[in-house]
Image 1: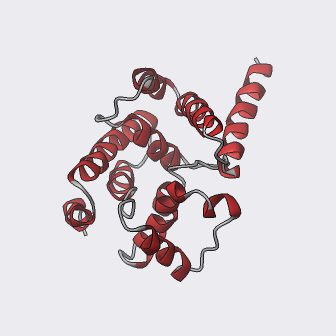
Image 2: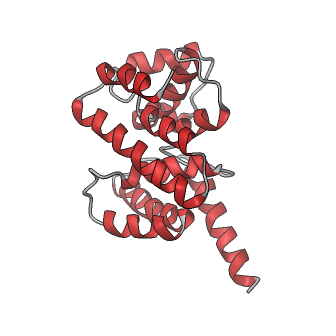
Length: 194
């Protein structure tokens, strides 16, 4: 299938606003892939598909997860906002027959990140934060950072996320912490080697 066919698949699955977000994430992902030497076609596809199950009913998301043999950890069970990335990756694999591990992981970890992320995973993670329709406080800084370093932009995004989750007394998923710690450790190691 080509990208236009995938767009036609997702369009009836979501609101106009969500669809536009997916298109914008796809466009931003292509820009970032060009900038950092990533695979532009994979970035475009992962961007289009990253929120494919976001607006499905929670029960349906859980069913997709369960049927895929995925067992949610305790943090995931209590964080429905994380389900769409897990169910989305499974849906894309099982229903759309996309078995490219990098695309599947980019969808799977676009919400939390994880230690050992590939370039494509980082691109989708950041494109989701910086797509054209985003207007949150700090988005201009986030976009600026994303042009200099994906990792710097990720750190900036994690600061927002961690503060928000902590202020609402919600759990921070270990994948987010591992990703944050890895970036900080790498940054410190580079700093000490100068």
